Length: 170
Image (cartoon, rainbow, N blue to C red; front, side):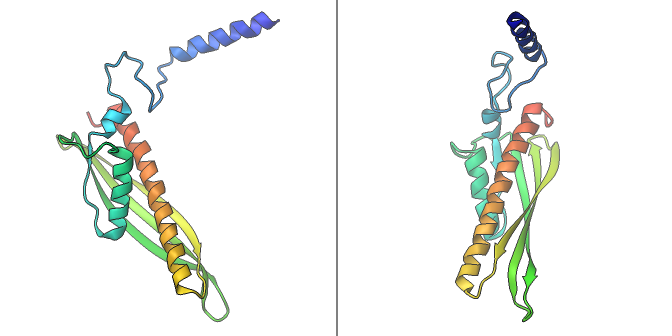
C-alpha cells in the first residue's frame, strides 16, 4: 500500500516539472537564458512623482525595484500619478468625526525604451481614529498614508515583475 503512495508522489512531481511552472523570484528553468526577475526590476527607472506623498511612494518603489541603486541605462520607465482623499465615517451628535478613511489611488504607466507601454492602477483604503488631540489625529493619518503607500509599492513590485517576466513589453 505504501508503494502506491510513493509512486503517486513521483508521478505528481514529474507532472509539475513538465508544466512550465516557474517561480517569479526563482531561478530560470531555461539554464539562465532568460533574465531573472531581480535583474529585470533593476532595469526600471522610476520617474519623479509630484508632492510629498509622491516622494514617499517614490522612495518605497526605489527600495523595492532598485535596491542596488538607480539603473544607468534603463530599459523600462515607470511613471505614476497619485491621488489621496479623506472621508469621515464616525460622526458624533455634536458633528465631530471619530473615524476617517484615507483612500490612495495610484495610476502607473510602465513603458519600454521603444515606447510600448501598459497601464495599471493600485488603490488602498486605510482607516484611522480622530481624537480630540490634533497631534494624535495627525500622526494616525500619517501612519495610515504610510501603510497605504508601502502596500502599493509592494503591489507594484509584484505586478511589474510579473509583466516584465512574462515579456509583455518585448
